[in-house]
Image (tube, rainbow, N blue to C red; front, side, top):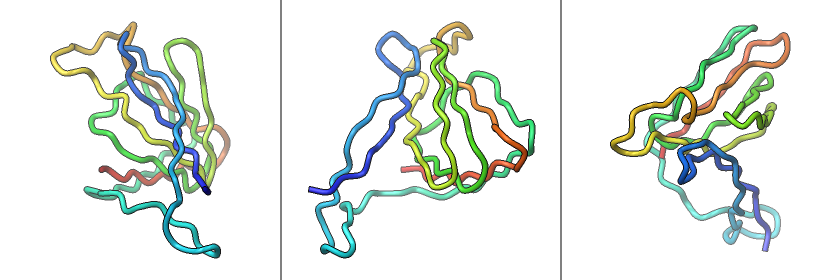
Length: 127
């Protein structure tokens, strides 16, 4: 069976953001066009971030897909892990703050920054 890799940024049981990977089965379509099953989506938001963009540590407010359309986006975790995503790459951001927990600047969230000299253009799709 053909699959796509789903990179997931999530909040682990200890409150720290981590990456994990799962497979999305492309079980529909035909030999020329393999398709996943339909996934629900709430909306689409586009973002342009200028050269030099960098965010503070934060959590995702609601789980969403992030697709990089232009530029290179680096995601940093509290443990020093980083991953870079370039044009055509994507990940599922689900590192939400656990219910009833206040944001702890030493534990929660991820940061992001633009690598390179072109503005970063991304598309967010909430499910």
